[in-house]
Length: 329
Length: 172
Image 1 (cartoon, rainbow over the protein chains, first blue to last red):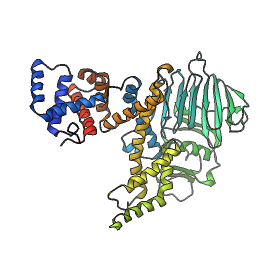
Image 2: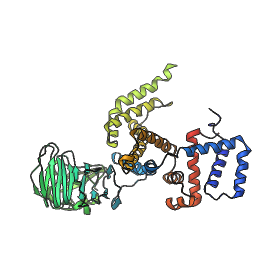
Image 3: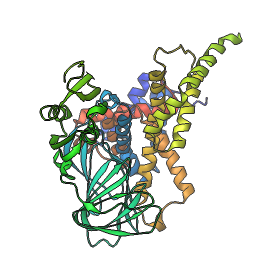
Image 4: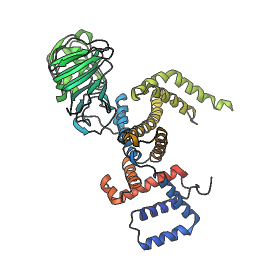
């Protein structure tokens, strides 16, 4: 190790840092400068510490423009990634002191951003650079790819509400999933990933849609809904009532099968939520609060011959009401 | 004695055999790129092989996840920095962008700086960067970061100390 890179003692380092802070703030008086000169000359180690600290500054000399901004901002991206990590591992995000919540946050977003994600039970609204509003429902993941030719968002998981912004923007606004591509025609609409495909519901105006594996394009108009699969488009049907109720924190169902309602509620809830086969096909109509899924489950019991069996908070099953019960919720 | 090495290798071998595919699934849930997840799962076991002391963990999967998380955090930190840099570059007119090679060099510099500052809190990191990159005064930083001026000085001292240690090692 050369003499110039050998570490100094902790005390000398602290003294050198204190001097740098003192002289750096521009308040160093003449007397202080003199005193510093004395300190500097007093020993080889002092001079070495000072020189070494100066070398640290050299590291930052080229960090200007984009590099500077990147360094200032990189922690934001890191925070997003860590939140994403919390999605995969229950409790881990909480251990980090980051809380997941259901709220109405509106985050102004920059020109370009990637990987927007919500945790289970969380909803979030983001505003894109073209003023488009996107609301992510629980447990959803979205990539945003804007460039000179197009405004494209890719829904990887979950559900979004889109209200397109600037109508003067010449670039087409496209929502993409594995199954299909949806081009907004100045509009408000919902896109939801399901096991059996992508469900598109147009709330206002119109959306042009084509499946990924075919150029066959159709236009879906206000009040219409369609299931998109990779190779084909399903029939156009009227939007289910309450399709957008989740934005108000409610699940609204009309004559729905219990198993579908439970599957829907479980999207907002950590842990296992199941339904016994003998009651899975019971029909139900009503509205349920999504912010409190325990309450939503309780609301089932007066109207259906079921009860809620909770082994733990993380393992809950809806069973026929005569079944042996472990612990009532 | 060669048997000093062996139980450790055997242990890592067993962990690998029994839990690698589980760990890979866990990683894939948390990392967008499947190849990256593969790399990270390999790195996890390689890191274990490099450990001086290794006892059979009572909860093997929790243990593996703990090791993998450390690697994931490094990965996220680097990825976030890279992404932030690319995002910033997109604001620069095309003709004025650095060449790909220059971009790589700049990124390497950035990663080196970021590593130096790993141990700082986000406020300390921000304070230090405002000072070094933008030349802001202590009072300006105090206002931006929302802390007192003495606290800013403390942050700056921490930053300098961390950078010093990264470059020259612990003071003696």
